[in-house]
Image (cartoon, rainbow over all chains, first blue to last red; front, side, top):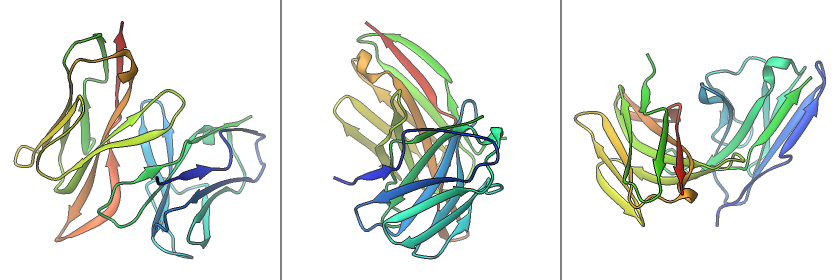
Length: 112
Length: 113
């Protein structure tokens, strides 16, 4: 079974803090994705990566950065957390562009 | 206008009812996905299809490429089917396919016993 894990299920941070969200997949997938999900807006793509050290901006990259130093790990970084970044963050991976994306359980982030 | 529209937004059904969720899209696609998200957040892929029809247990997904429309049907619905169902398309641009998915906003289904 494909497994995508995320470092935390729930996280509470203060405004201005640096936040790291980590995602690990165990299927040797090339593609990895970070989404945020907000009520009424659905899933929106923040960043994706199609190879180690490669990254591409998604629809809403502002305020975020990413790191992919190893194939199995894709990190999302909030350099200075703000209250409007309170959201559910979901990581996903896929083998190729045409394949199903497998999602992690999500991290619910609250920024106070 | 959203590129992927789902209807209805919310749906309440009695156990045993036949359920249909619709998805319309406005772009050329290489594939369409149906996803299920239970309370708690985890998302599971139900189907990926590019033509015709697929069936898995009580779930059936159909797609009409010419009409840019897909439906997800649930037969003999059960309270455990209560979840958010999300339609997503992989857009095809100018002969190639882009890796990203475009998501609908989801349909929240509640099945009452």
